Image 1 (tube, one colour):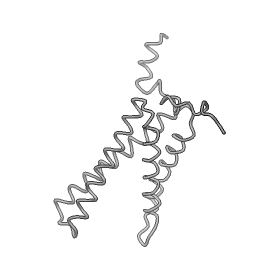
Image 2 (cartoon, rainbow, N blue to C red):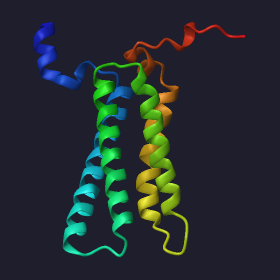
Image 3 (cartoon, rainbow, N blue to C red):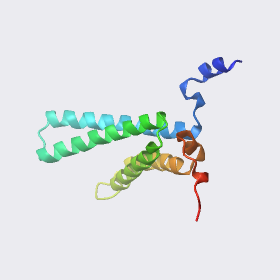
Image 4 (cartoon, rainbow, N blue to C red):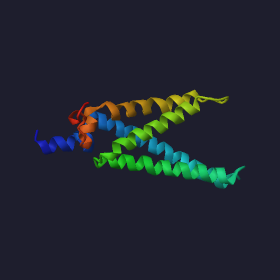
Length: 147
């Protein structure tokens, strides 16, 4: 089988390391969920009058900024931007914080907490610990001088 036919058989994701595919899949899923939440907030804003207009607007804007940040991180990883590694870690830390927050309080939602924490830990640890992910972005952690 020639290299070209092998590449077309594998598709676009065939040449990517598994660690990159895992991180991209988690980021894509998180972005889609944020888009759905943003859509729900916008519809809810117009259908039902909020108790606090400023809080409703602020929450909608924050979620919209999150969508933009998650999407920019996804695109940055696809473009092999070195800065996207830090952005991916930050995204996963935010998801982890949201998961921990949803497991606390009187109305704790453990299902949501697990759905947020498990992928965030998987992607976050992959970004930080995987040498293949770092090399994909052009970072060589082994070449740094050690004290």
